[in-house]
Length: 71
View 1 (tube, rainbow, N blue to C red):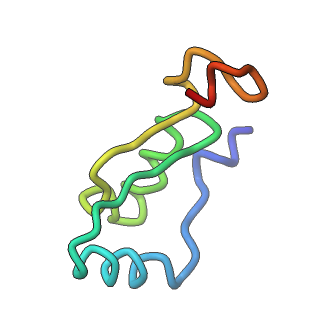
View 2: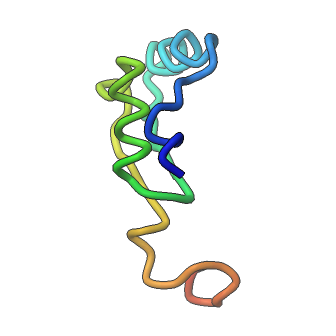
């Protein structure tokens, strides 16, 4: 699990994010793990400022398949 703290992004991610932002689209992440891991990944890649909001499953009161996770 410690390896997740040192992952990088694919080479085409930064360019794709920049192209989307240039079109005026807000970027939001949704991760299935710790928000701090996703935030670290974005910081290491120099992309943290490109994201408007970081959402994580940690923020949910219930996980799928619980019905309340769909509402």
